[in-house]
Length: 153
Image (cartoon, rainbow, N blue to C red; front, side):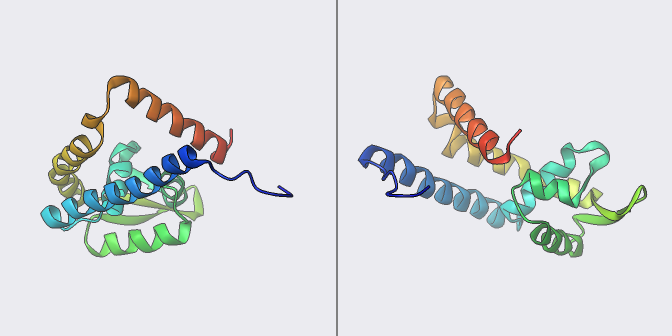
């Protein structure tokens, strides 16, 4: 990484900026939809989804952090806030005293069930339905490749 960087040309810069701004605007819209209709933040919705998909509705805090590309301390704070709202609860890992699980509560499952149609509609209206079948495949392949590079094998 010594020497002059390989600067982005106009087309590369266009793609980069469209991604950066598009992702931010899309996330803001999805968050706004969930906040207005369900008083639920997009990040909290994502954790509820991950817990609902986990065996027994529970996952280690470290696993959740990895799944949503967040830090352990940030997830801990977020889960604490969600715990106060009755969406999740913490539970010590019986096999590993240092491990802590986040567990989806029945209230959290109800909130997720009610919010999911709003979120899916927003994802469809603002991204998925704007793409052709081929574009969806390319998008998935691109970000799977990016994740593979950044997360490693």
